[in-house]
Length: 102
Image (cartoon, rainbow, N blue to C red; front, side):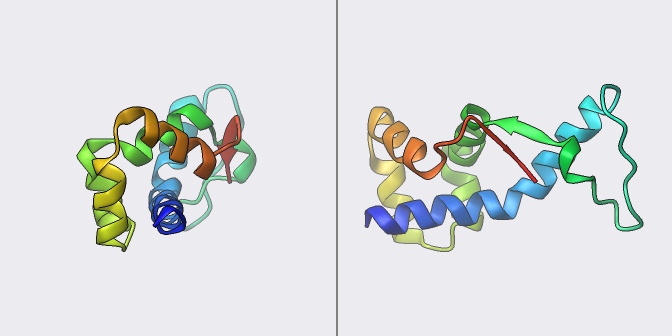
C-alpha cells in the first residue's frame, strides 16, 4: 500500500504541476523574462516551487486533489486515514527535493 500511496501522490503532482507552475511563473514573471509559446506553455527555467509547497498542495483539500488525480481510491483513502505526522513522512518520501519545477 505504501508504494501505491507514493504512486498516487506522484500522479497527482504530474496532473496539477503544469497549472501550479504556470501560476507561479505568471505571478513571478516580473523577475524573470518569459514568453509563453502558442499553447501558453511557460519556459521551464521560469517556474519553480518549494518542495514544502508541493507537499502541501498535493495533500490539500481533504484529499480532493488526490481523489481527482491519484487514480487509486484505496491508496488515497489509506493516505487520508493516516495521522498528519505519518502523512508528512510519506509526502517527504514522495517529494524529497527542496525545489520542483519543469
